[in-house]
Structure formats: structure tokens, C-alpha cells
Image (cartoon, rainbow, N blue to C red; front, side):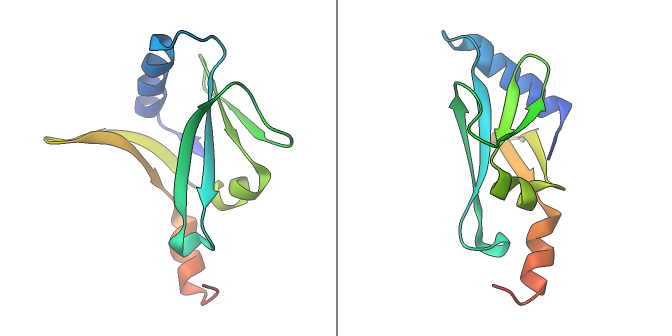
Length: 103
């Protein structure tokens, strides 16, 4: 999984506002298959067993092994629009899984 500089910068600012040191970001895929999956992001104290660790400079991101397989080509970004802002995950594996007929 890739994380854009915009997303890293925004997350670093969020982590700096927290009163706890060593927080990281857990990213996970929730749902039955990639075509109907949702993504879960939350702050955590550290990695879980078998997690893939992504060094983002001032913090780490953690992805469990099952989610990592589905997120290999995904990109986490932060967008600022005229009326809203937020994190997005673009995952080309979603489209590939849906077209395979496995869902």
C-alpha cells in the first residue's frame, strides 16, 4: 500500500495533536470480497501479530496480512475539496476482483 505525501502530512499533524506518543495507523479491509469491501482506519498503539509495517517518517502504518494482500496496489490519499476534505483509498484490486465473477 502506498501513502501519498499529502496523507502522511495530514496524519502527522493529527498524531502531533494527540497526547499519546507512539500512535500508529491501522488500515484494514472489511467485508466479504474486494468488490463490496470497506476500509477501516484507526489509531493504534503498535502492530499486531504478523502485521506489515509501513514507515511513514513520524509514524507507522500497520496492515494485517489478509488486508495486505488486498491492499498491495492501493493508495491512501488526503483530498481537500471546496466543501469537504478527507482520506480516500484508491484500490485497483477492487475492480479486478469484481470483474472476475468471484463475488
